[in-house]
Image 1: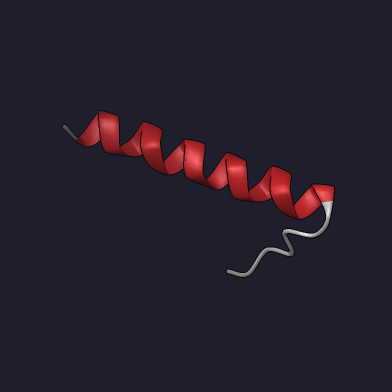
Image 2: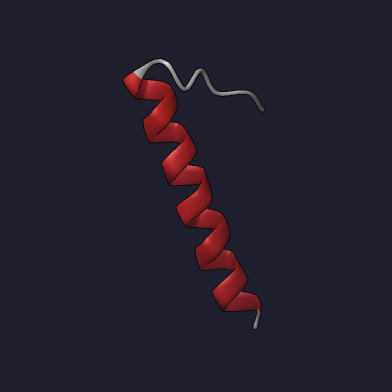
Length: 29
């Protein structure tokens, strides 16, 4: 998936995805 980081929507999606990835990493530990 590609996000356009020059838009606020793209930045929001990128931060949501990274937060979710971090959360899942904590769950799997």
